[in-house]
Structures are given as structure tokens and as C-alpha cells.
Image 1 (tube, rainbow, N blue to C red):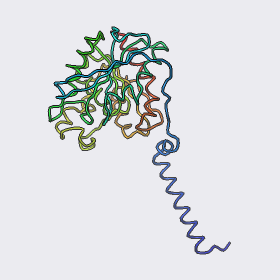
Image 2: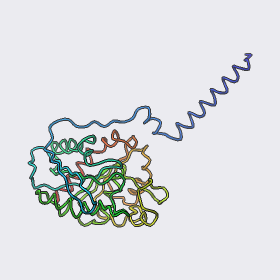
Image 3: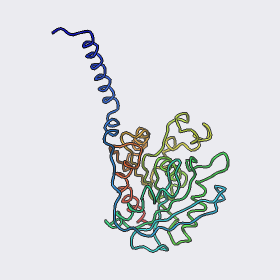
Length: 286
């Protein structure tokens, strides 16, 4: 069959395009599928318990911060329950926990299904503090331990030992907090924790230089988390999947899940039902 020069060029371009698409699909795997059909975990429906909000003049952070506590269905706002701290992600605030992330609905659904009841408490940790003391004196970790937990205790919650959960920056913060006070932490459940092996790979502003990274390096000091019940979830297309897998591999007793998905609420919603069950099971030990 005789082909014109234009037809030959067209066929060559088509073959090249096919090769590129094939290479891309082979190299990215689930990432390509996720862009075409991203997973979206459903937010549970049904009644929730009360959500109480307030403000705290934080000396540790040098500012006034907002806090919120979500109780399970059937509980009063002064209930004597165990509590899990909720640490938000980068550029977020406490309002997301029981707003766009709807964690109070996942809590309610888990408790209705038989999970032992507990409360969730969120607080403003700063847009990019990564939940540890910064060079300017802002110390969200001290706020959690020295200000928020005593406030929650005065409200009737059991705070001598507690749980921690969070996503992205908050996932890192939850692990960092547990590394500092492992004896007080009953359970940690994180989704897509922002973890890095080297200071140079960290997000801009996450640490005040290499020495600050070394002082707060979760992956470099995993021995501090041995004995703390951990659950780690991360989407297989999430940029933090390799670091989260490294944590799980180093602490093989860690409960974990790697669903299809990326670094977004749709994927985290797939993880949160099991997060709530995990926290409730361990918090019931108080």
C-alpha cells in the first residue's frame, strides 16, 4: 500500500503519542487512574452529638486560638469521656475538623455501630507551624499539652492519657506529639502524614533549618514511638506514600491501610471509619 508523506508523518506521531501515554501509564500507575476516576469516600449521614466551641488565650502561641469539641450521639457537653486531639493540615484551622472534614459525623457513625464513645477536640495550630516550637516562639505543641488538655479536663473529659489524630501536617504533628509524650498517648491515627527523610525535601517553612528538622525528625527517631498503638493510612498516589510506608515497615505492629487515592479529603474519607474504630478501641482503656 502506498502512503503519502503526510500519512507517514501522521502514523509516526500517533505511534510516538501511544508510546508516551503507555510510558506515562506504566510509570504513574494508580496516579493516572486516580485523575480519571478519583475515589470519594462518603461522609456518614445521621444524627451527631453536640459540638461545643470556644476561644483560648494561648500564651504558648502568643495569640487567641479557637477550639472545638465534638461529642458522640447520646452524650452531653460535660460528659466524662476519653478524648482524641485533632490536628489540622497546612493552611487549615480548627474549623475544618467538624466542618469540611466532618469528623464529628465519622465519630457518630462509629459509635452508633458499637465503637466505645469518646470525644474529639480540635484547636488552631497555625497555618504552617507543623505543630512544633518555632524560632519565633510560637509553640503549638506546648499549647496542646499545657493549655488545651487542662481546658478539656475542666470540661470533664479524661485527659491524663489521650489519643491523637490528624491529616497531612497534622498527621506529622500527631506523630511528633506522641514521640514527646509516648507514655500519655493511648493511640495515634494519621492520614497521609507529612513526613520526610531529609531536611532538604521538607515543605518550605515546615522547619527552621536543618537543625530544627533534626530535632523534630519523626522518621529519624522512630524508637520513641515503639509501644504506642499506631494506625497509618495513606493513598497509594499520595506524595507521602513512600515515607508513610517506611514508618509502617519500621514499626511492623502498626495498623495500616493504603487505598487507591491521593492527598485529598476524598481519599481520607475512605480511611476515617477505621481511624475512629481504632481510636475508640484504644481510648476505652482509660
